[in-house]
Length: 376
Image (cartoon, rainbow, N blue to C red; front, side):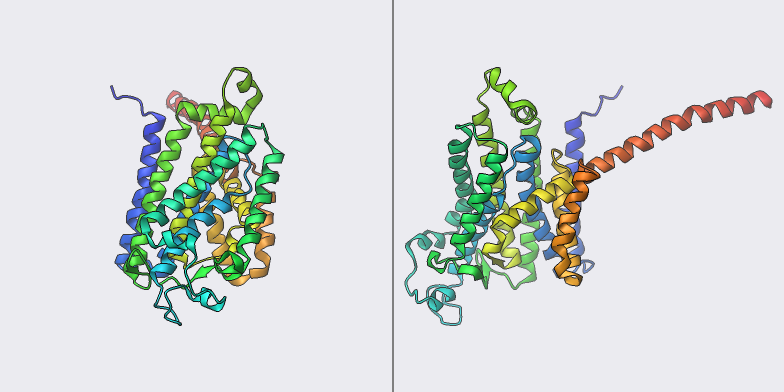
C-alpha cells in the first residue's frame, strides 16, 4: 500500500518542474540556439520581478497588509548594486575620471563619502538585502507598534514612496537625478556585453527565484504562516488571545522588503539602468496589480501575475505605448469585478467544474452500460 502524497510533497514537485523549465530548460535552449539572447534576458527581468511579487504576496496576500511602498525596497537593492557597477567602471567612461561620468556633469570630482563602501561587491550585495529589511523594520516598529493598520498604513507607505521618488530626482543626492544610474559595463568583473555573462545572470536569477519560492512556502506552511493568515482574517481576535501581532507583522514586512531588495539586485544588471521612475508610487501600485491579477494569497499567483503582466507590457508597449496604462487599469478592474481570485482562482474553478462534470457523466455511463447488457 503506497503512502498518500502530502500537499508539501506536491509543492516540491511543482517547484522542481518550475526550476527545470526556467533554470535549466531555457538556458539550455538558448545555448542550442532555440531561444535568442534577447528573449533570455527578457525572461531574466520577468523572473527578477517575480521575486518582488512574492514578497508582496507574503505581506498582502497572506497577512492582509497593503503596502504601497514596495518599490522603495526594490530601488534600494537596484541602486546598491548599480553604485557598485558604476564604480567598477570608473575610469572607463567618456572623461576617464575615477568617478562616474554623471558626477563630472554636475561638477563633482571627488567620490562622495557614502559611495566609497560600494567599491566592495560584498558590501553592495549586503546593502541590497539588509538595508531594505532594516528600513522595513524601522517603519514597522513605528507603525505596527502604534497599531496603525489598514488604509492608514497604505497611505503612509505611499507617501514615503513619493518622498523617496522626489529625493532621488534631485541632483543633490548624487545618484544621477532623473537619469538614474546607467551605462553599466561589468558586474563582479564580468563584462555585461558578453552573452555568457547575461546567461549566467539569468541562471542565477532563476535559481534565486526557486529558493525564494521555497522560503516563502516554508513560511506560509509553518506556525508563523498560520498566525499571518489569522492576522489577515481577524487581527483583533488574535490580539485578544494574547498574540503579539505587531511582531509578526514586522517580521513579514522585513522579509518582503529583503525579497524586494533581492529582486532589485538581480534586475539592475540585466536591464542596465535604474531610475527614480522605478522607485515611486506608480511602480508600487503595479506590483499590487501583478499579485491581484495572478491571485493573491497563493504564491504561484504572484509568479504568474508578475510574469504575465510584464510579458503583456513588453508586447503591447511596442505597439500601443500610450494605451498601456489604460490596459493595466482595465486588467485591475477586471480582476476586482469579474475574477477576484485572479488567474489561479480561475484555474481552480475550471478544474472543479471539469471534475463535477466528470462525476456527473460517470453514473450515466455506468447506467447505460447496464442497460446494454440487459438488452443483450
